[in-house]
Length: 161
Image (cartoon, rainbow, N blue to C red; front, side, top):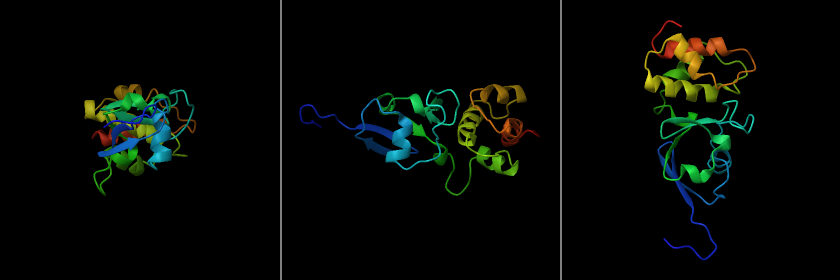
């Protein structure tokens, strides 16, 4: 497909299994496209520097800070947000465990925590507590609910928390 001189071709990406095209500037943070163009509000703006984890998504299976990931870098890749983890009406095991364990307090960070935990369980289905703590190291929780979240991830992995 050709574009008029000076015009940009749209950037193509797959989000939660659906193909999308974005005409946004290629340097636009992925987070802005997810929230403002696609209406996916699970990933949140926290620090804008990729340091707090509130904006975490999966890109080709890896946990990525969407607030400082330019749109051009995900062209042709598979992006999964917290909204895309559930299988229809059935929540992902980490999502269900967060509810069961009442792990979230204010819940601002919880979507990023869920994304980190889901990636961990993909790699290590029954992680030890130390693995969970390490996997959630990049997620900042200001409410102090971190220990409950660790327990929920252990529960999701079949442990007793």
